[in-house]
Length: 161
Ligand code: SME
Image 1 (cartoon, protein in one colour):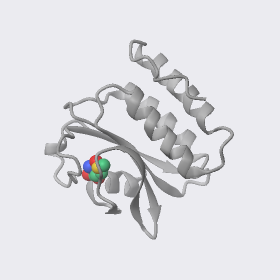
Image 2: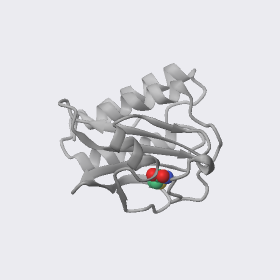
Image 3: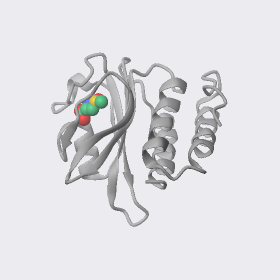
Image 4: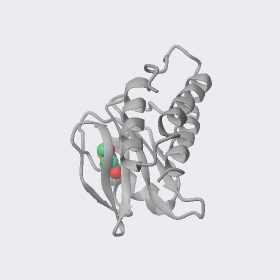
């Protein structure tokens, strides 16, 4: 059950621990993956400070296709290897871009985005399922603690896909 946005006054490690607990609570009893991703995108967007976009791209037919998100309407299809999302997906590695204007292949869906973190979601047997993409209007918004916290959220959601 929704207990309200996680307080951004908490130290980051506690903030993300509480966010993960809320994600677990939201998705534990629900088998529908679209509903779970939609609620998680809303929870991230309304809890993590200073974001302009948070959502999911799912691997379908060999490319990333837009899934549930919060923020401005976004690019629908991203080929593997293209942009921050496609590169993170292709490499199965988290990509944390401090300044998207300096990432040569960045796909500017929302011109407000200045920094971005993309976290691949994989199955238990390491198959790529999609990515969690989070954007901020602030340069260098995401640090190691944001990465660790969001990595955990991506894993929780991936386990229910
Ligand atoms: N900027 C991303 C595209 C997705 S939007 O940020 C929602 C990229 O370069 O892959």
